[in-house]
Image (cartoon, rainbow, N blue to C red):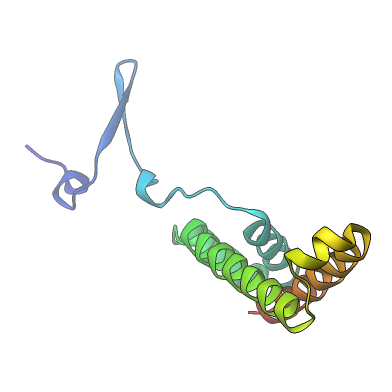
Length: 123
């Protein structure tokens, strides 16, 4: 006879002689990167209700993963666009490495600030 938990496609893990219900799906246990970690800290400190709602509903990990992926894509796109618009390219890198590094650091900082303000430190 199946338990109610098994009827709704729940599963158990056997630990010794005891069966424990599997409550966290391994399919949604994503690794959270830099941007997702920053957003998680922001939620914990400034929007606790949202953070705990996502956590108790089992949606926090997938939410942070999606935020992390979107932020990384946005950051990479901004860096590429800023580099093109400022003329920072491989030719400059070959001719004047220090200037190239300086400009790329400035571009990275600008892109980071935009991503922080538009995606990470907002809801």
